[in-house]
Length: 431
Image (cartoon, rainbow, N blue to C red; front, side):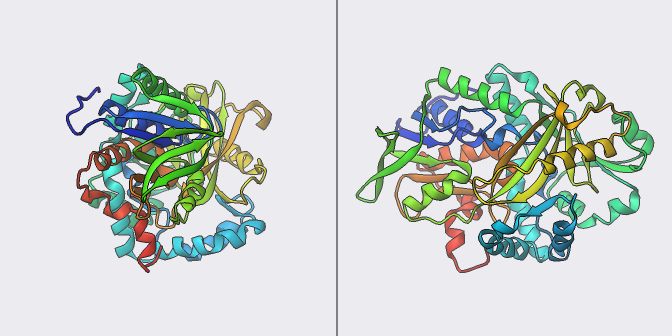
């Protein structure tokens, strides 16, 4: 995993953000010989970060954008359904409506979704191998399991109705095997009778403890020389159009380069230097049932219920839901209860207690309207780079994001980042 410093002379880099993207980027930069400081309000791996509570999927099939042709027809139904996968609080309508319009527009045609799928593919193609190498180096190889991923449907017709999504996967070299009920039950004995058909994504993998994994990577990064500071970035110091330092908690740390990987906090940080990031928080929820992970050996996605089930070190996790709410609004734990109900519905033979017996969580996914992350240099201040806006794909996308940032800081020409730069939001096209 260690790499010799053959690319450039060491420079001082501050990475703001202690989630999976920030930690992985800090580690990659340090292994390339830079002097790295990781600045974060939250301890890496803590429950406050979005990285902690995701479904843990490392899915090459996630090339399918969340916004697809015809989405505009489905959103009203999702919003009106009390137990649906999407919730928009009325108080958040004013801040979310423009983003939602951009989101629907970006997936309005097959041409657009094919472009997005191609842009997502590089992050996903070898993510399982990249994470396996990282976990091995950090001393936690058991946290990454390569057992494949299962997507289940009520019948073959329901699978065929999803033809565009599977076509996008095929076009981007995703390999899967379709299965009838007997094969599904062999993989997931607790699966409910309603599911008679499915697709097994052969190269899929998962992380058994996203929070524990991020914490382990952070500890490894510190061991390798990354300096960790607990604090809030309050102000950026700019000299002659170039970043020179960061003020945090009244203190200062000097730097030659700055990486903004602060999730939803990146919006405010970017505004300080004149950049606009059109991110909104797609709040996600999970419930985790302790002791139930033995009932499912591989991750399963219930296509109709729009949620994923993953065996974790702490139990069986059901994750999903998208909620738009004002910043700081209290969690609506009804969304987590919906996931628990879906878990019972999808795995009816599994013994699951009441909501009070579960561990439940809510976090903020930093999402762009075009479903692509924001990666690349600031057009306003030299030496500033963005690594944020990964939405539902932060975990799976982190290793390649870190590589892109490291190459940019080394002074390389990196044409691959063109689809992800912040400048795409200033070109007058659809966001």
